Length: 110
Length: 110
Image (cartoon, rainbow over all chains, first blue to last red; front, top):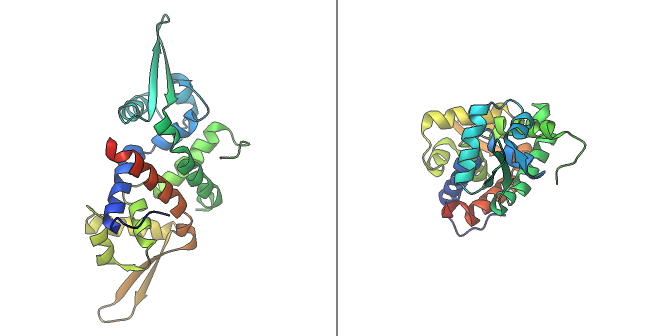
């Protein structure tokens, strides 16, 4: 469980820091989808139900700035861009899997 | 890991359902704080860094409606209200602990 030498509000504060980074509506679904391997923009846009181009551009920029994904540009004509999870991004997968499991058990019964 | 018989977009969609319920900025910090035991409104307000009364009222209403917390009113004068996690709410604690751990490792180095 969470170690106990931090005060409750310190811990809820650092949890908030995490949620500032990955708490957005689309971050965790994108991370989950990239767990399957590298993807191009259009593939990602098709896989994340309900997202539009503008939101995906913004989200990917944030995630790259926070070191969660890598963005690689290939000098093809036109240029190709591929996205992959960084090791730091991959370390979120257990949390996402466990939230997904909770959802399977409870969310659809809302 | 996440079972594979669902398509990628179905899984990212049910993840989104979970985040609609607990993805708000304050839900997980509140759940984490209530993991320490029952709490009254003012105690919660003091423990969740940066939250104000209006936001806490709104968040607690959502969480009660989604079956994540219990709200118990005691007929004292004035009435006392105590909040506790439901079993369903408690099942989120492993995911929250693992997100918190990720934050300890990475978030402060942002």
